[in-house]
Length: 474
Image (cartoon, rainbow, N blue to C red; front, side, top):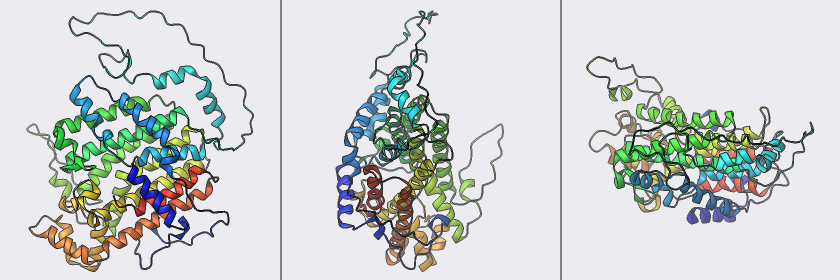
């Protein structure tokens, strides 16, 4: 976290303004979102964004991390170890950071903020439910040893237990609220938003556990990956366990809209992985089931008709959104919804647009770094995508300069010598440079939408992130 924070801070010092991210010359844009447009005249009141987001939210991030480890407890020591494994290694914490920054940047603006803020201060029953162990007494034989809880014995046959009568809790009613709402930033965070930050990080780490199994990755964050340390089975089960814990926490936030948003992220992660495996926008024919086997032949996924060059870019950027940007965009939007934003108010649209563009920029830089940074810098093996048969931005751009790459992309770099030859061609092209230029376009668009928010430290920090994300080296 320190290195990332320093990188963001340094980038903000050397850049005169986020507005200096200029549209590169001769950039070919393959996404509708990335089409060059006339940029708005910068506001005369715009100032240099100097706020380090990690310094601004350091106490909250530390509190989030500490209580998160408590939430992850399991009665099985191996599952407990695998669930906490990636949380114990340094990480950028970008996804929870976005949740908390948008909460601070918008709390007080939504029409229903007065209600949700009053509930946070006065509705003790909801607060107690939010902080209660994720394993409840009435969820049968489940046990989190890290939190006070009820356990059921397996020494004898289970007997009916009649619960004692419970007093009906008295819930104070909110005072009558005026029809008009004063849009004033509070710079505060709600308990539900802090919990949401933990939930998005749990979902992210669950996706890393599953990805490292699928990609057979030996390293993650500079240490042995979870599959390398614990084996594939435990890594998959650990990811499933994290999704279960995240789902339980999500159900207590009290917003159906937020539940639907975050649940759709999990579906997006799966859809993005399938799209990446296919490498085509066309669905493969389903494999007929028989009484002998119900297995799906993954070759069917890869043997779809070859997409055109423009289709490849569409598929690549759509996959990038589904696997990376969706969680950032919908997590940020969910934070604003929890802050009392109604349908039709612009704040949650700003959060989604920012998260979507920043997430795509983040992944484009990741794909460029795969070719330009060392394994030690990345904390994971370099050229990993190419060795997995995946054509990312640098390869797709390089193929425009060296058509020889097209055939290699079609066969997913599966022929002897393909990877080495592709690396030579990509390094001789402007593929990496043009991928970074495309990332700058998305980062600039993310910065532009922040103009709808009132000036604050949180907004300045969000502006700084648009620079830090594209200038990072790991």
